[in-house]
Image (tube, rainbow, N blue to C red; front, side):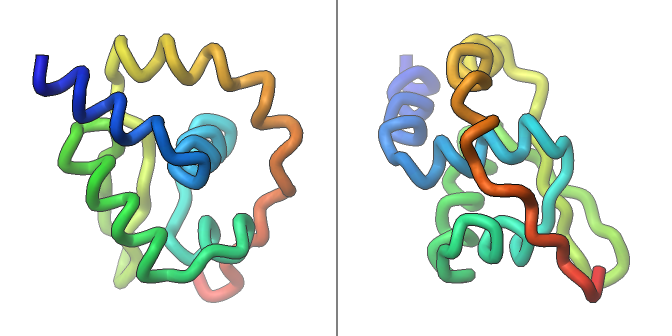
Length: 100
């Protein structure tokens, strides 16, 4: 029950939905790519990612000094993301991190 409540809180924010849609579309992203693409501040994006990581929605891996984020295999969130996948085509193209 707590997991569902936590997921509900996460998907109640438009910026987090956009971030999830980008990760679904692009598979892997670093924080700077999310910030630059969605024009959000780094502290805000990092806070959202921390919440999503705590809820086991996103996972990380290290690539040199970079932390790369991707979606976890999660049946609940997959169902939700399937329903918003249509919206991801309206999101801007990824602003690639030139230093990664």
